[in-house]
Image (cartoon, rainbow, N blue to C red; front, side):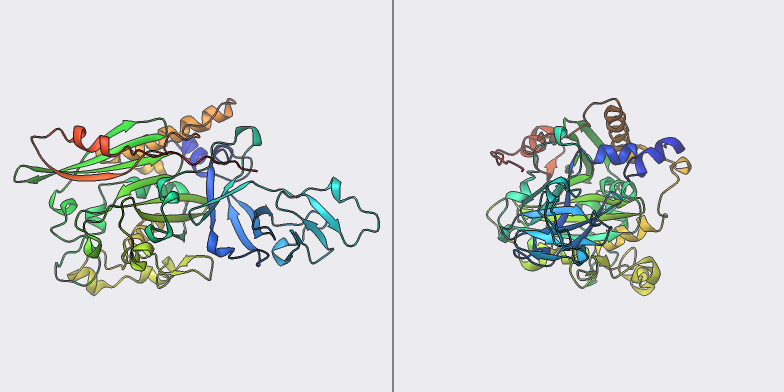
Length: 432
């Protein structure tokens, strides 16, 4: 349980807030590369941490991320012309490059463009994702290098969707491992509706024992379930500060059974009331992924579930009761809601925009949630004292999620943990 003061501290992310200042010390995914498909293409609106921004790809292919409002009279730069190495406002013709420097003023007979800069944030593009850093220049951490960003296009898929609740609620819902075989359960084995099959080890194993190891980047944690017949199912995750989870795919999952596949999320605050849920999946072996696997369609991430042309809003919302089907709920799946991530959004949005955490009743199954809150609070306080937040480094770059079914007689840690650290060379990067 959090106090009211702690709850306010962690959930408010706008400019000038302690949590906002802390989150600005990390790189954040801002938009997908395909949203800016070519040089001088139309700009795109972006909202992060309560700030309205505009992104554009200039004539050289470099991505700029600027305050949406043009400095002279605050017209929207989203209306602007993307031309000849910069974004030109259609109101007075002032033009800004990707660094925010004004380079031309059509309405001024005597130019003073060199004296004018728009707010601009550094960007980094890799693996189909454009990242942004919104913090002080002297504290910029290494550019993001999650393993999925280095996977080839044929082995990687990335999607995103808006969630209408505070970012902390989304994060906590994602790192809660005990809910998965309940919320996402299929109760009729023969049903065509997606859900965890009754023979899935998460379902067969019942309630997990949660184990957690602190790390430099956050923590790794494990749901350990007894399967009977002398076996144990171990599912190992990583929580990477401040809003990333890396998780294994299910053992024996559908057509992708046997593939060396991993998924995860970034829960990025749009503002106090909205979060952008980023979903990534990839193969770390030689296996390629089908288009359905890249989109994680059974999780509800494809265009049939998410309106990619309307700000990535889910088609199932509170307004239509998340398209719950009570007949399906009665006979086929635990929720009657289609898609794993849609089910997550439904229960998390149903709690309200910002949850009153003084009313909670937490138990041992909530250890990952409790620890994440502690790490976030510690990071906020360290930044307030002039220090660096936890995990704003590259210590996560070798981590990998893993799951195993093992004999109970085996020490599962000796088997699983070594496989959760990969051998690879980080990508050397230089951000302008």
